[in-house]
Length: 182
Image (cartoon, rainbow, N blue to C red; front, side, top):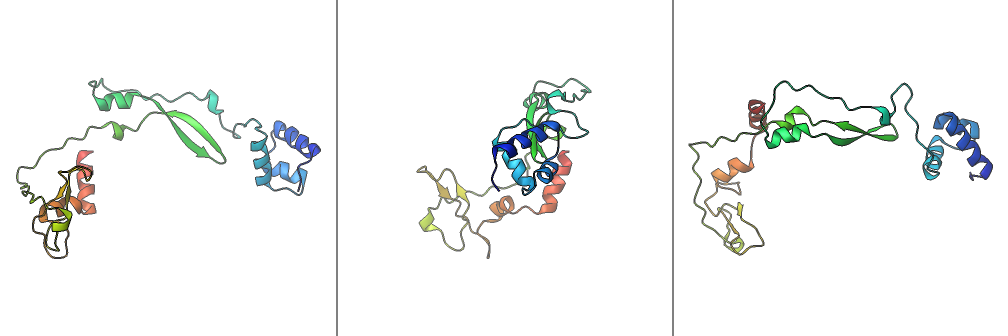
C-alpha cells in the first residue's frame, strides 16, 4: 500500500476530527491500524487526549498534606522534591509530576551487633588461593593492595563463615529485617 497525497490528506483530516487509528484504517481501506499510527508519528501530527480523561497539560500534580514538620535531613529533602515520572498508557507516554513514595523517604538505621567477630584477613593473592581458603575480595582490584580474605572456608563454600553470612542471606531474614525497618 502506498501513501498517496490524497490518502495522507484524508488521514490528516480524519485524525483532526478525532477518529481512532482503527476507524481511520477502516475508512482508508487496505491499511492496518499500526500503519496509520506509524504514519501519524512520521507526519508529527499532534496527539490527542484520551477519551474520558483529562489532558496531561491541564492536570495539576496532587499535593499530599504533611502531618508534622520534619527535620531538614536528606530524607526530608528527598520527600519534599517533586520529580517527573514517565508512565505509559496505551501508545502514548504521559509525563506526570509525582512525589516519591513515603517509603523512599524513610531513613535506614543500621545498628552494629556486638557479638560479631570479624576474622583477620590473611591477605592472599589470587595465585595463593586454594579450595579451602576464603575467596572474598577485599579492596579495589585495580590497586596494589587488593587481596582476598584467605581464612579457612568449610567444604563446598568459597567463603569463610563470616563472609558466607554476608553473601548468603535467606529470603525470610531479609523480609523480616525490611519489616522491622518499616
